[in-house]
Structures are given as C-alpha cells and as structure tokens.
Amino acid sequence: MGSIGIPELLLIFVILLLIFGGKRIPELARGLGAGIRNFKDALHGDSSQGDQKNKEK
Image 1 (cartoon, rainbow, N blue to C red):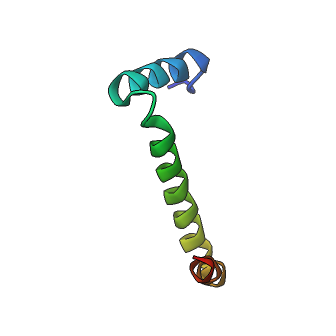
Image 2 (cartoon, one colour; image 1 turned 90 degrees about the vertical axis):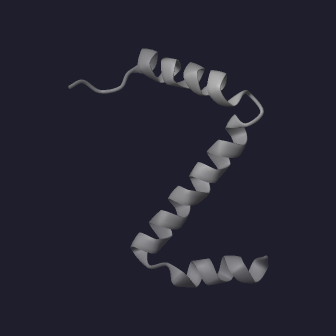
Image 3 (cartoon, rainbow, N blue to C red; image 1 turned 60 degrees about the vertical axis):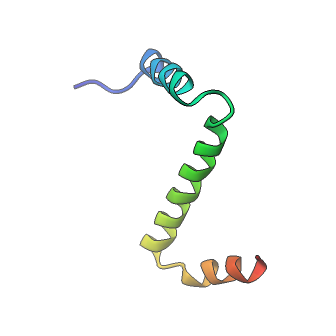
C-alpha cells in the first residue's frame, strides 16, 4: 500500500468540490479544524485553555 500523492489529493479535492460546491468547502474545513483542535485539547487535558476560550466568548 503506497502513500497518498499529489494526483490522489487532487482527485479527492475535485470530488469534494463536485459534491459540496465551492461555497461550502471553507465551512467544512473550519468545522474539521475545530473538531481536530478539540480532540487534541481533550487528549492533552488542556482544560485550562478550553476554559479560557469559553470565558472570552
């Protein structure tokens, strides 16, 4: 099994573009980034950082 190269990434991006359209992709990327950030915070136990973010909002 090989690694994912540039042609494969381009194919995935084109398929996502066709499915979701150009306007929804940034929204999906933001949601994915926030989910990964929350997951990393939960793994590291950075509850103080999460509490600080909630106080700012």
